[in-house]
Image 1 (tube, rainbow, N blue to C red):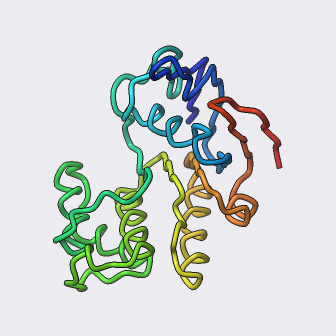
Image 2 (cartoon, helix red, strand yellow):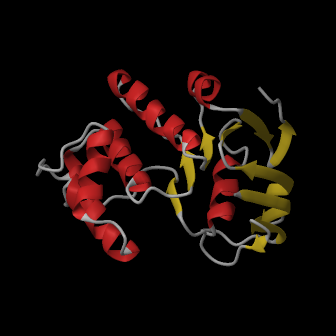
Length: 210
């Protein structure tokens, strides 16, 4: 599988949030996007996912122009958007009802992979930020997507769980999937990524290959 981004631009109030970006992402690799807050990382991910409309440019997947929301993708964008009065299991169950291809066993497995229990009745509003992040990761992987787009996936996750979640991400590489990660954590980028792109003011300013 290949995702191609050609001359992608997003402008709001006369300001370029993403400017003339062209990139290629191939299966079996993990790509890191780094840069300071406001550099355009999250906007780029939203444009790829179809959560935000572009002003110009084109996104193709295996040569087909993407229209609307990206298919067969798991993602985390900014803070986890969870139903506060549901348990972790019920949050995943609610989302799975829209996808239609995730059964109870897959939900339980996804939660267990990130170190959570499907039997936990505690409402996620009472979870720490790190635990909410784990729920979001479980939500992203529960239907075993071909593409993972993760914005700060290890933000606030406890040290004892970081290794486990890194292993989950690396497993997607081994399964020949496409993984995109934006992170402020240098260790995560160095440990996980095959290719790293740096963004500044909405542009790619450096693309060192490991």
